[in-house]
Image 1 (cartoon, rainbow, N blue to C red):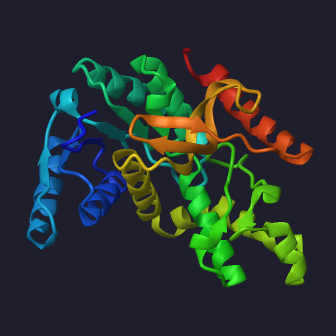
Image 2: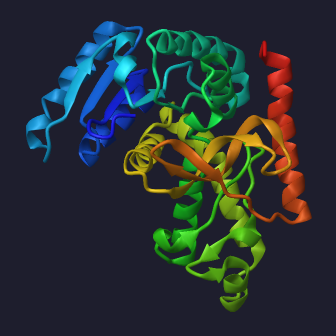
Length: 315
């Protein structure tokens, strides 16, 4: 990875990809952004639109449309391409359609000697991260899925609203599949440095009310899709946060889709867990102590993903 110039290649200039692009320009944490899309004219138009706002940024950023040859010296390739989740459709139903797209994109990236980090946002993201890792031959620590990054942000937002506490002081995570089998390990959640469960007792609040917050998180994407047909701003900002953790070598803990090598007693799949993110990708997976109930939920989430891999993928 080039330590001086920060080059991102973004594959897929739909709503999610362009929400990320717009966020990256506002943050100003990169030097070069290349847009790739099967509709090259759209990539040109998006680059033009972004470039016209560059005079109001506080730094110079090179934005242009391109092709896969741009991947040779890229630091990060972000994949946002693929079919979108339709109303009433689960993320897992997208598997076969998007797996084919992921293999094709990954092969084209690797044909151009890419040696950076893949960030995968296409759904179902845990499965698509697995596909990209297998197709690329990259070390799993250099293929990162957006996982439960957005789910965790939604959780912190709703908890902050309910408890009237800044969400920056809420340390809570959603684990598991980025989908219906995700869960919150409540015993590992903290308000500042105080365990959430103790805080709720002090404030005379019951678990039913806090469990309702998880229901809001789990159903959020479905509700947004019902109202506006797609979700993109939240994931765009979440992906920006992940890229800044990579480029700034932050060693920040983010809940991403990471390859399991026994950390939670599981092997050979991607799933949402807290991980330390730095310049080389996933530095370490943080292993939380889970109670029996949470272990069962995690196992169920893994089984859901494994069954999808067996049923729908060639690997």
